Amino acid sequence: MLTLNLLPSTNVTLSKSRAKYPLSPSPFHPNLGSRNQKLRTLSFTKPLIQNGHPFRCSANQDSQISRPRLDFSKILRHPSGVSSRNTTQILEAASGTPEEVGPDGEIEVSKPKVNMKLALIFGLWYFHNIVFNIFNKKVLNIFPYPWLLASFQLFCGSVWMLILWSFKLQPCPKINKSFIIALLGPALFHTIGHISACVSFSKVAVSFTHVIKSAEPVFTVVFSSFLGDTYPLTVWLSILPIVFGCSLAAVTEVSFNLGGLSGAMISNVGFVLRNIFSKRSLQNFKEVDGLNMYGWITILSFIYLFPVAVFVEGSQWVAGYHKALGTIGNPNTFYLWVLISGIFYHLYNQSSYQALDDISPLTFSVGNTMKRVVVIVASVLVFRNPVRPLNALGSAIAIFGTFLYSQATVKKPKKEAVEKKD
Picture 1 (cartoon, helix red, strand yellow):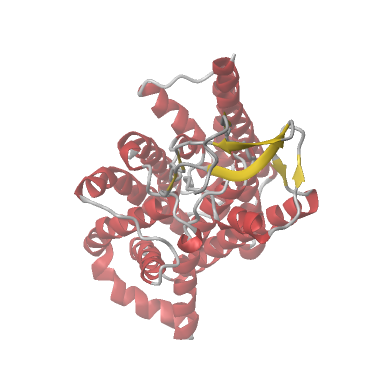
Picture 2: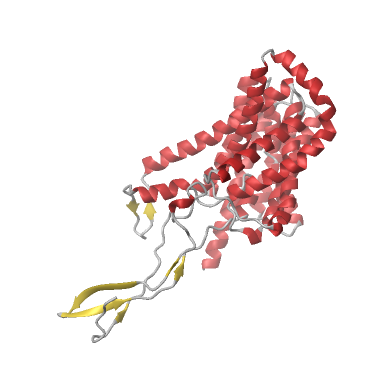
């Protein structure tokens, strides 16, 4: 580099600009650039003119772009989990699409573009969820063996992730013994949550299971409080309508079954403990994004569940299989239903990660609440389950309480951040 050392130099300080949508690596596009490269010794050699004399302008700054961190505080608020920023934001920034710049220098995406993006995100998320719930129930109606079906769904998710890693559609994380050991607890509770939900689906209507599962925030607050976390009064008040609504829905449910109710409640406990233990045991592995984390949890859950499923139901599978074929008539239809339930179980979990990547936690919470409404309505329309007025009222109250809880928990971190800033 050629510079003029005869003249005095002027140091220029480079400050990092803040962007509303920072570029971060995507799990689906690992070749867009490494985030571990260091930018060193930035120099500007173009001569400038000041008072008729050229002068040299140089700047040295060491900076490093860090890899995205997995924030487990989001997992406690959203059962689906959390991962790094996704592909869409990188593609938008790299595409050169005109964007608006706010007065504080932040990049703002135009409203039509945001609306289209949100419609696509929620559309895929809800579609995958509805398809899974419908075909999962269709299979369980003629083949009431939830342990085998739940194992197959975890197997499909495991194969799906292995394909993504093998073809480099998703960067494969570097794992070690300590990572697997830390993941054993969350994977165990994920297994309990999934199999309990499948048992509930096999015994009661899909709508009733989802109403009871909307009480998951109650278990989150209770268990977290026992472990030392504190919640404001608004959070405690928001869980009261959840408890009342679930109780009213359970009492007036036409297809009420104690096993179905117990399965849904145990599922809530399992997923809440999974979230809590994930936050506590996986803090040292923040370089692993949420989708990869869920992939390894799925693989370990399958290893946990399948041997137990063989012990619990294995002796009944052959007879149940022939009975199911006799009921449905066409074996290919049965195979298709099972396959769809397995694939869409993983897809709806994957799309929930991507939804949380693209939208704010508050929008995600509202969307997750509305998702239960959509699934309940879709299942009632497809299976024509009888719904009593009080049952519908209880379901509405419980879901509304879940909405209030999401509002209360999302606003809490914002207030803390303002207080720290002050």
